[in-house]
Figure 1 (cartoon, rainbow, N blue to C red):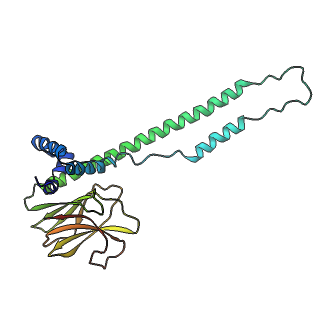
Figure 2 (tube, rainbow, N blue to C red):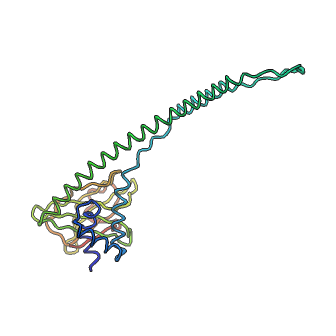
Figure 3 (cartoon, rainbow, N blue to C red):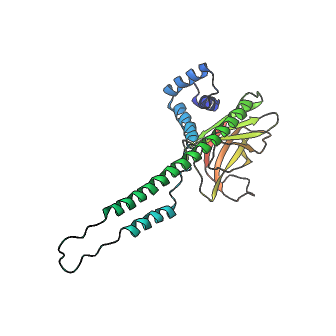
Length: 255
């Protein structure tokens, strides 16, 4: 079996997104056990999905911590001892301090309950957004994969980034090009990725890729009239007038 062609066939996306038939799923799981490259590509795509779940933890507001500290200080006054030897020790009203401590604990408990409620609310919102985004992605991929005119090109990682992976969907009739970023490292603030079509050894600019905090996106790229391969390079940001790649190649795939 040609492992690279199998990875490029779209079976990974179909399996992880639940689009594969039972027969395809059984065959894919068998190939994951037999070929480490297939398993690594599946894990890379699954990791990309998992990163969407937990990103918006709410930090404790500093003003509440300050209020609690001030409450403790205001109640914890030092009681001076008399200079002369007393006939008996002064009785301390411990109930007052116990009550103050209870109030502080109650305030802290109320705060953490509110914090957890807010975290749960944010998590639910994020999950709903991710679910809607995933549903839309599934619909888009179904349309593309069901179109016989669309060629799917899996671009595997190079020595520069072995675990990187991306998929190009090229409509040979309309010449439309769509890009699914399966796994690419987040670039530095002064860098950005660029997609290229390769024809007779010459690169054709297909546009820049803005990697966001929500990477599960189907990017609409420039049209390609003809192509023999596709590649993504990492370039300096703001070099729109340059039409030749200067940075390293991160992924590459042939038709």
